[in-house]
Image 1 (cartoon, rainbow, N blue to C red):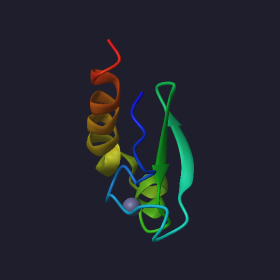
Image 2 (cartoon, helix red, strand yellow):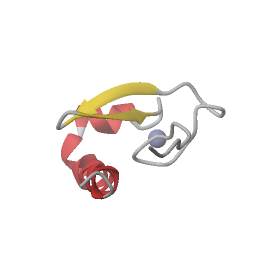
Image 3 (cartoon, rainbow, N blue to C red):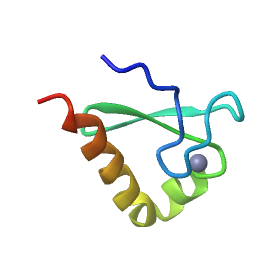
Image 4 (tube, rainbow, N blue to C red):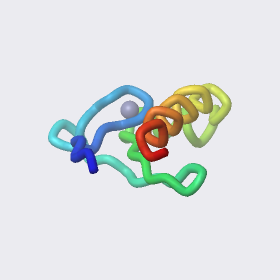
Length: 63
Ligand SMILES: [Zn+2]
């Protein structure tokens, strides 16, 4: 089990820099920072590739 620091899936900001919000995607837990939340809410298609990539990376080692 990897113990990575919590980081925004979109820009990589970590929780030592900014408060992060927990989000769930395809059953996996991710974090998003306040700066990226507007994109997630209003232009979710613009961050879809990023969270899909984060999902692929997160699940790659779980097989
Ligand atoms: Zn961010």
